[in-house]
Image (cartoon, rainbow, N blue to C red; front, side, top):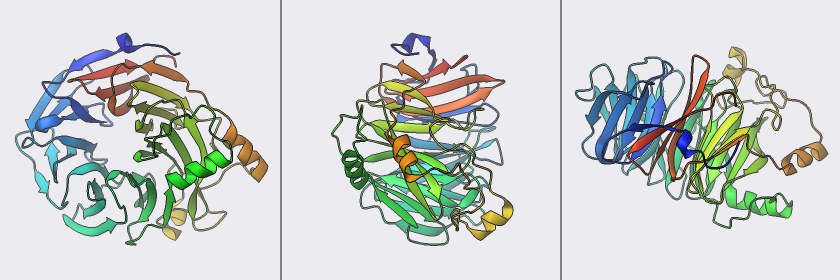
Length: 371
């Protein structure tokens, strides 16, 4: 399905300011953050059921707690507020530990740690039990645009930034355990003629990373219009392939982990396109959830070449090169008509939906139907 599909969307009017970020709880409640401090909670029918203004600073990122459905964290300016959506009178907790504007926050699946990435390139790690900063990760030389914890590895997280670097971190260390420069990777792609359909020559400033539910596969969207896929192999991540479908920078990529398709990826960009990719056939899909013993052996990922939790179909080098050069087409293309600020996906009683925040003061909901 392709073409212009903006009229397919249901619109929720969010107020007077553009919506910048979204998150969806496991119960199907939606939280939105907007310019000038706007924060709202919605039900799936598009009705606002709570709102609060967070001191006038733009709300840049929102993350629901994984263990308490009523708690949500929101970054605004240099601060992070913990909110109880049952009573949105004032924050129940306030963290002011970053020295510059926060771009992204992430909470690990055990709710033990929160990571906050800011314009200085720093990532502050907050222990949510002690409410103290336990790590300051400083390796990005430019704005750190995104940070995300890996499912099944609560001590492991990824970051990316406008220095074109993607980094894998272990909370036990102050230096990244793995780093890739997308500019170097771009040169390798060109040398290997892996550029079919990718004609944009913008620098690969890294905007956003997302991790699949297996914890071993992640994607990164960049300013050069490409989406690059990586997966865990042994002690490091390795480049798998690139996806080309956007003709301007890719601002958002999200594995739709809340849906029943663990390798569905949704992307949105400055070209106002929304693309749905089904990667089940293109990447190794027999990942297993790591056992407790394997997680104890490695808090970052897999420590041996045959580590549990990183199993996959064996491929020769020739096969891998062939797979990387295959040109993958999106399963669905939507001409949204406006630059994308944020994307979230949700599955409510078998109904697959995506929510889009853009430059307008509305939230758009697309029902994916039988896609």
